[in-house]
Amino acid sequence: MLGGGGALIVLAGLAHYTDWPSGLAFVLSAAAMSVLAALVGLSVEQLGDRFGPGATGVLQSALGNLPELFICIFALRAGLVDVVRAALIGSILANLLLVLGLAFLVGGLKHGPQPLGSDRARTIVVLMGLSVIAMAIPSLTHHLHTPAAEHEKTFSLIVSIILLFLFVLSLPFALKRSPSGESGPEQHEAPRWPIALAIGMLAVAGAAAAFVSDWFVAALEPAMDSAGISQAFAGLVIVAIAGNAIENVVGIQLAAKGQSEYAFSVVLNSPIQIALVLAPLLVIISQVFGLASLTLVFSPLLVVVLVLSIVLTAMIALDGESTWLEGATLIALYAIIATAFWWG
Image (cartoon, rainbow, N blue to C red; front, side, top):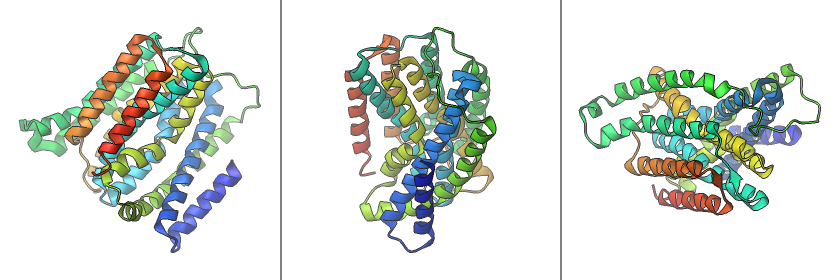
């Protein structure tokens, strides 16, 4: 993987710094981002046995969102605020509907109905709901024309600080090791990487992601113009899926292995961190470093589909098990929402 992935990154760099067609440059940079995401996932997996599933899940989600953080920063620098807003909501929707749906579909077809009824999974669903709804409150104040709407930037900054503080408070629960009876990652018989090598690969992948994210955003605008893609669709679908490649792969793999509860936790860790960390950080960074100003005010349709997706996920979790048909329904719902944003 490393050899082919390195070649893709080199080709993406050549496409960026030379006069290659914008469509090809975009495809190569997106492929390079996926390779880096896979490398991060592999490195985190090598650390899993040392840190335990709880810490590994947090680390996996945090580093899995690192490429998207870089993409959004460069997009803000380019003034693509609508892309960033849509990408934040799109990342949550992609995990709640597309990735979770694929995990349910693959796991259900292979193993039948899968249990989700652990206390840990239910607590994660509650935390996810509270986190995402808290992130959406500035949107409600704006669209309901409350007095706080006149202080959009300040209110978004205050909410961002509170959300980051909530994330710190949630870490002890997230890092708690699972009970012996709860499913977790399988033990690997293959030799483990030395910790220094795994951490080194994470550092290299993070540094490379910063460069490739810049190339990705530079190719994104011409690609949108040539294909007639709106900023909303580009952020909601393209950037969201490219930036969440780790969760896309890991969650589905765990479900295919019959580890449904652990897959559920891994997939839902990502939207929690998007709401509590990624979105607040981008709001603060945009204001501190003078980028295009980002607030936590999203369009009414984005807020509605977000809340409905959370309610649907909670209903499935409280039911205690998942089926392949529920997975197919989640995927269909994601496709409908994505289509609704094709025109903007």
